[in-house]
Image (tube, rainbow, N blue to C red):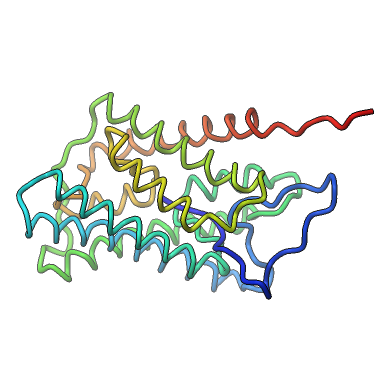
Length: 259
């Protein structure tokens, strides 16, 4: 579930890149934000995202027994919550909230392009994981659930793992495709809309995020995932990220100028 820079205001809009320059990568870290501020934004943003996912799932199950309505409520809350978080925190940290987005950005920026460095990625990842766990505990606390209770919701079936590959590959394609097309100002709406749609068109309901996957193992509620299913989900999410980057390279291949 996660994400790129929020839309820039008129005052902060970046200049048009010069011909031949490298397109900005998603979530390119604003240089004026100290690393501690960016780490805090990633921790708080991921915590808030998981709190929205878990909390809305608990609320939905308390209000209706219809599983379809439960998923509709859960996905709708996630769409609005994620969009707001990207819009708010994108200018600070890039609003990744997702280790695969951070790792994919580091990989694309490793040759000197815009994006997080290895040192910054090493700070982002634990912040995202801690934030996800804290968000699940917070949601449980708000609804009077046990603060930590391992989920019993098994999600180890092969078709669910395939759904996670599709969900994660699509997310990476969307974010980095927007970057290549210089359309990152659409990220808050585009990323949130994609995750909302992927809730319904993927069999796994689109976790697409290792940190969120870990956090959701800490709650035995509607949005939970059994700890035994977590390694498989994270493994295929990494595969999905690789597939997504390959699709970006293929679809957004730089054209050759005419002689």
